[in-house]
Length: 161
Length: 160
Image (cartoon, rainbow over all chains, first blue to last red; front, side):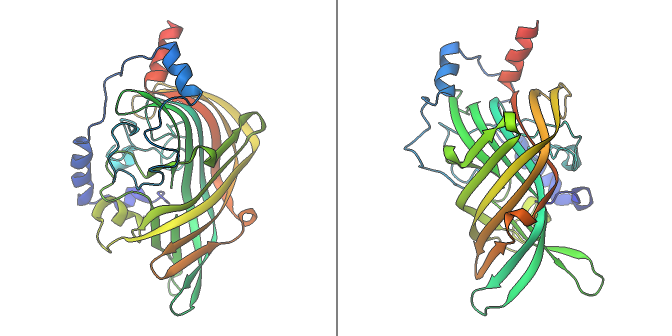
């Protein structure tokens, strides 16, 4: 996503979304601390992933509730959107040292980039093609150990697309 | 993915595609989707990382305001996206311990570098094929290892 123009897009709808997010059950209190054994099991990938390998991958966002595994979003969000959405965009609309991860209670790797170039769109019905720019697409990965909504430690890999 | 069209008249860019994996409204985890464990490779000591995924279900909201605020103007079109990204180089190594009440609550070691991406997508009657990875560029890129939430608090406890 190119969110550089977000400040110009604040609308009445933002208030509605803020209310919706306010009701989302984000755990703001500190979760119980883990034992060394719990941490070691999670790091080595022996924690249960909530299903068979590959099961449930690529499920759109929150559309599918999987409480046993669901990561918890970071509690805050960019002030540009009044904190209503649980992400920051370091060095784009937020300070360069803002939180790049969208999952809280996480210990792991992160990568972030704002990417641009050209894409060719083809209409498969007519064969018409268009050359179009994609601009500052925000792409991220997160990989490591996290405490899920179930309070347990899990290991997982995620992307912000 | 954010795709724009250059209007011939006033030469302004208008967003015409916004592909993200979240069903409207985007409450909770923001535009974040689980991947296979082997989708990510990181070699922090070399400043390199890669991210690959295939056929990730997405919705095309047309533009970001619709994805964030409206959700149905126009109605989102389901599709899928595949992408390959690479991070490389070391422009700067930074250690961050951010306790800011808004932007912070985490600590980590980061490498600021560059990234490139190639991607394909199918949305409705349209297919998208980006130019090769090597032609793309980033205005900002970083990789790192960090801890937040309870892991950051535990880190704090050790410091006391």
